[in-house]
Amino acid sequence: MQCPSCGNTVQANATACDACGTAIPSANAAPQATQARGWGTKDAHSFDCENCGAQTVFSATQMSMECPYCGSTKVVALPDEKQSDMVAPEYVVPFKIQKEKSGALFRAWVEGLWFAPGDLKQRAAAGQVRGVYLPFWVYDVDTKSYFRGEWGKHYHVDEKGPDGQTRKVQKTRWQPGSGWRTGRHEDVLVCASHGVERKLVEAIEPWNMAERQAYAPGFLAGWEAERYQVDQEVSWREFGRKRVEEKEQRECEQRLRVDHAADTVRNVSVDVRFENLRSRHMLLPAFISAYTYQGKTFKFMINGQTGEVQGERPWSTAKILGCIGAVLAAIALVVVLASAGRKPAPQPGQPGQPAPVTQPAAPG
Image (cartoon, rainbow, N blue to C red):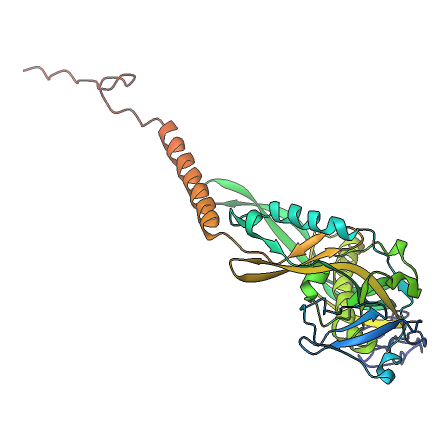
């Protein structure tokens, strides 16, 4: 890479430029989090599900305890030392969707599914919908990214095709380019749950982080919450960092394009360095359940703030094949009509075609 100050080439693991002494950002950083521990109340206790391994907090007044992820009643209290060693939540986004509305949102989602079996609406029986505060690590980080690649400008040339006709053909003139980009990434979300499908969690994003509030035990009243099972360092290393790097890749490609007023870019590599990485533990609201159809179970989730619904679903093979058949039939019809619209070349002697000229016989 190159020094952001003087342009001198430096080693990938260098901490400072050999030529001018400018500090080079570190490629790795460990997140810093609050030192507070526990849920902040003696009325909340964490339990471990012996069936799926999820760890859920229940109120001391709750009479029956079932795992919200698998429905098992085989839940056992965590030892006291594990009850108090967790990083306390700093913020919470409260539920805005009431439990009574979650069923209507699920039914509306089922009715809007494309290529679903015709009887799905009547037969999809949702299980008990549970409102759960999901554990998240939320990261803020500054980035300095060195990028290099190729940027291109389009131009056009005249070329003759196989039919002899001349056409304008687009070409691209490529040139190398590189540079630095400074960025700031806030509220990078990583779900720290083992009880839910990560792809479902990401599908119901985003939550409106502007509505977050400082955590207080009272938010747990009437709701369940899951204890995080992936710590902030692992979550950052395996998931959070990747999300930032993917965004930096897009931003650097755009930067290379804008810097050179380019039409396109390619082969852009990005080396991201991180600074001031901080993590916060946050609780975000979701409804979790599953429904059965023809003996199979399909999971779904609802964003407890926005009402966004996403989930697994069955597909109707007959409807998909029918749609493909209809498209092919439409294409065939267009071809037939186009062929019928072409007039055949008139043959000699046909109406509209001049009669052949007969040469007079030579004098005998």
